[in-house]
Image 1 (cartoon, rainbow, N blue to C red):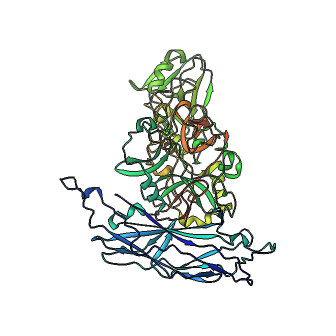
Image 2 (image 1 turned 135 degrees about the vertical axis):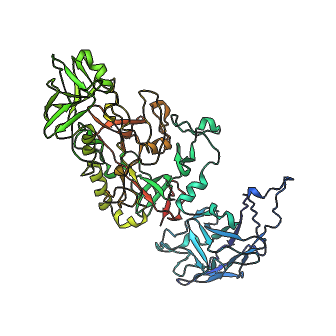
Length: 627
């Protein structure tokens, strides 16, 4: 697609220095008039090519007409009539948009503010046509309907008025006068563009569409173990910018690496755009408060991008299996001690009858011996045992082997009150109690007034998937971990990153949440309905998409999410004797910390599909403003 833009200026001449009464001044006026055809915009889709390699564009022609009468003088409170229309002389429907820019220049060609610093008045007032069919979205005014061949639009404006309240007295020192504008020039500049109607999605002002249009159309085959850096060489850059990620046939667009145009203000708070969603929403991460009510910029850094500029523990401790939960159930902690000299019977299964547990000692289902003799064999699949060495025991002595590495220490869970390890895991991962971070985030959401804007948000899934894929905790036929410091029983979420730096440094983003129990939503339509508000935390996979690597050397300090602070995610990592949750750290790279540690919180929300930009270009000094 090809687009050519044209701009037109209206120049207002020198203001005469005359004796005037308050609220009245005569201004000599010279207008540079651009009328008739002032611009042609051509557009063609790539599939327009024919076999002789020519492109059919001769039938695409647009006429922009600017019309007004040029008076000899411009007085305060006087309106200069002006219209701007677009005519479609093409043979296909088109769409149009117009951007208006203003500028005051003094006699030395130095720029003056549009709003007088002396009186606080907007000096030139643009009069917009009522019910004109033009609607402002962002920096442009869009014509609401497609423009058929031969059709002419209405005008977006009717004229420009020199403010009736302006005091352009040229003598005396009056604090409230606007004398700086005496002898100045006023410029009204418009930029008009058209596009074939069937390509108008490229002008869509919905946040999700803006992200999509910014994406790099090339397939980078990104290596997610490496950082994203700025480079002209796409193989070196490794996807720096806005990229597309396809999973299960669905596309999402995400920001990656050194990004400086994804700032956004919603509900009077600053955010950074993370990615789009499969349903057309846009996921945002908190980035502090705007610089002021009047100057809407997003300049926060460090701790100021976190809620309340403080740190939080994830859970009430880090010793229980349940402590990785955004919500949790029973808290069962790992036990350890010296093995008994008499040895044990280790079995692959156990049955329960009230408070009595009996090991399965049938052929091939158990091994017997001392800890030193049988610990490596038991670790493969014979995890159930009685702590007193018997084959049948009470609920206070039935145990499940967790780690076999140490010759001097045996690590296990007591199963008393649970039928088996699966029953214990289910009780631990039941969503009954709020974690400390869930309580903190939802309280902040209410106190910050964001709940008043909650209708703007999609009821997206915030995933805390606690599915275990390695180690003894996966199940009775899974081997125990071999290194005590290794994160045993890693929780590998089907929708989150594979983060296994101890083995291969592998990172792979997966965005689907694999089980409904851990799919946190406000309603039960597409999740567990356990959220008080539509807010959660970033996931490990979203860190990987953003360009965070598995080791310090593979992640850029310039990554747009890097704040120099350790910040919690919503992704469980694993459990040894310490519950670990993923986070992005001070180095920075993806890491895992105990849930009793204190780190920052940056909540995540998801704007609904269709939320529109009303101004801004996404930079920190001019962030997107959405409605």
